[in-house]
Image (cartoon, rainbow, N blue to C red):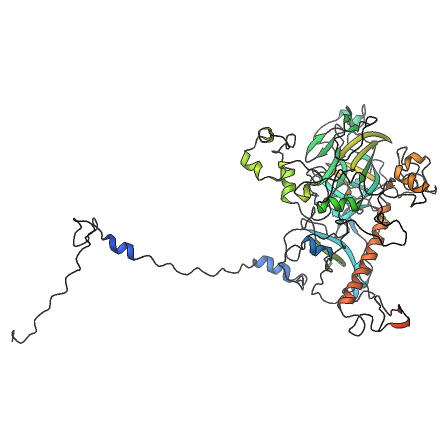
Length: 624
């Protein structure tokens, strides 16, 4: 039986070892592994996983689902338009919203106020009460709100246009203020019971010279008064100045680079949370040619006093023309050529004939005003929601207290700042702010300054060479639907008042019956800055400026509103006219986009003659 079983076959012998080394073992072991197999076999790498889509949290989805339909009709992700694309700026965005309800056609409701508890806030004389506005859309970081109303005359722009509730006058804005600020019913008085909080006005300064006043109602007490001797706990304080939209509302004016402030204690200037002194520019010597690039000598003013209760502070801001501002933003400013402030230069100066077409210098073309606004209902009113401007990284570096600008343009800047060279090499502050800075947000405006008056007397110049604000110096956040590089006609410097621990102030924009309280001598001659009813001509021809005097003698434009000081309150009426104008322009633009008459723009026009037409709507053309 054993002979019938098949013979067992031995397994094949392993291959001979490699002859790379004479002492390589024939059988590998943990101490003597076979290195030839490791060279041929590599570990398998799985394919990369597909990126998972990020979704909002449940809390965020619930908060947005019950609100409004805020999905724009355009793509959420879009690149900022180039310089060439902004010259032919697109129209404002139209959002997918529901048709307005009947309540949207009603006038906006008056602001609702709530008294302070347990004790009301009263003025020192006890006649007026300051209350906190409630049930209104307040501006927050990244979002800005203004009142809107539905109008059947604007069907192509989804029936909504700009409006405003009472009081119909320049005042401190109830929406553009911190939620803890208290106001009088006319919006001219303000106070705050907590730490530093700020309120901005509803008027914006973009060019020219404008002036407003602030009276300290409660702050540093008078000398030898009972309140001055009874000092226990925090004392009330007030700061005043000018602020841009990016300046925070939960901090005092002068906190960062977006605002310029004046303190009541020690009466100092404040910018980037750094105090400074007032100064007087020294007159240039005879025989020397004035140049915008030349450094002007100054004489500092030493003050040893505070701004006390009852004092009136006057703040005057001077800005160059928007045409010069545009040159700086576009990077074509030449200090050797652009010597003036831009107001005396007519755009049509190249052709001498009055009938010749106006020629704008390259780079000074004004961009269209583009307002990307979505109407949203809130608390019985309708508001326009706008993607607001936010601080940029260069401006955050500019406000950094660890970086010194004293030697920014010198070789020892790194040593004087106390920071490593690697940090400053990547910082935008390798050079101090100037009109030709590589970063648009750090470019300054020549012929710009802020002057301060106390009880009608000039104290000195607080700041000069203010920072530029036109886009792209100001830019919105990188949120869904935000587009960069567009001017919405509300970019500039706003009057701002900050209060601390019960500090109270009253503003005067020149719209009262008696005008300003203590106007300076060169401002009192104008009706908007002094008594009303006076003919708008300066009593002294020296007040008008050289360019204005030359224009009058040569039969030119005469009075120039860019150089003549005016009250800030005049900007309120100008802003209303600008809002009406741009609402009509937007309606006409959307009318064209929607096809005009019968699918063709101007197809329904009635021809009355060669080259003439009577349009049936906003846009008309000759039908050939």
